[in-house]
Amino acid sequence: MLPVSRNVPISWGDAVFTATSAVTVTGLVVFDVGTTMTWFGQAVIMALIQLGGLGLMTFAVLVLAALGMPLGITGQVFLREDLNHNTLHHLTRLVAVILRVVVVCELAGALFLSLTFVPRLGLVEGAWAALFHSISAFNNAGFSTFGDGLVGYATDPVVNLVIPALFIIGGIGYVVLQDVMGPRPARAWTLHTKVMLLGTGILIPWSVACFAVLEWNNPGTLGQFDSAGAKLVVSWFQGVTTRTAGFNTTDIGAIHDSTAMLFISLMLVGGGPASTAGGIKVTTFVVMLLATIAFFRRQTQLHAFGRSIGLEQVLKVMALTAISVLVIFTAVFLMTASHDGHFLDIAFEVSSAFGTVGLSRGFTGEINDFGRAVIILVMFLGRVGPLTLGFFLATRSVPRLRYPEATIHLG
Image (tube, rainbow, N blue to C red; front, side):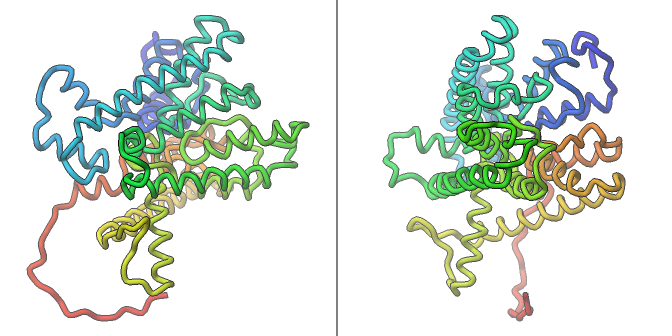
């Protein structure tokens, strides 16, 4: 809200919504960031994106390490939960890996994007846009200083290679990156890494192919391009960005309803744990599918890649899915009750907020104050995670009594 941060007046509601969207790396906006905010204001947004992408505990570890102060056992426990790590060992090493990956990827991304932005915008403005979009992409934020997003760069080869590379690396998870960058061969990677890479390797081609098939002849999206190559390039970008990043090289408001439903499902799945992505996470989705398959096969044990998955992990998946569905349905109900006649737009907006994606069908600017409060809460829950709040508020208790087992008829 400082005068040095903005070119035109904005309300406190606009400021709170934008700050929440930035620190939760969502990317939903109620005004044009490039024209409304000065470079200082954009730098504030960029700093919030970086803090939200790293995670508060990771950022705190980096600060304490720079000051030479010990983390302590309590801090290590919180960091373990923040990074979804099962043990306290090697946490500091993982944070060091995170720092190296962040610095190298964001600087390299800014350098490569300058090849496109500098010739068009000039040296200073182009370099600034390259840095802003590099940080926004790696942290899966989806913020852009351009009013129409990246529509003007829909077929630009640099943008279509660098931006997806940044948000895929940022959204796959630091634990996976540590495994892949380590000295161990692929067969020795952890089960988490293998499941995450398998799920990502399936979802990316699926989303790209589905977008191409559904939108190929839509004059508002792919139909405006004459060549099949241009359509495939746009399909590639829009397919991979949907699960978490939130950038757009085509008009999201012009997509078919069937494509909007596809996007909703992809946004709810999201990226990887201990990453800059949101959603219920790819590993949760994969374990849920494996548990369903195991049930129909009458298997008593869940396993993948020669390793078993414990009951506690399956229960965690069930709890996360149930809470996520409850949060989304409640938010959609509240938004529908306060905004009549926009059901698909509302469902799309809520899913985008919960998955911290940032895509919108042009409905963000029409949301009233009550709706903004709902979306802010959903963005917060989507970034922090409903299970994180549950574990923080709940206390572990050991049952003193065991009851006889009974049967409940299900299905």
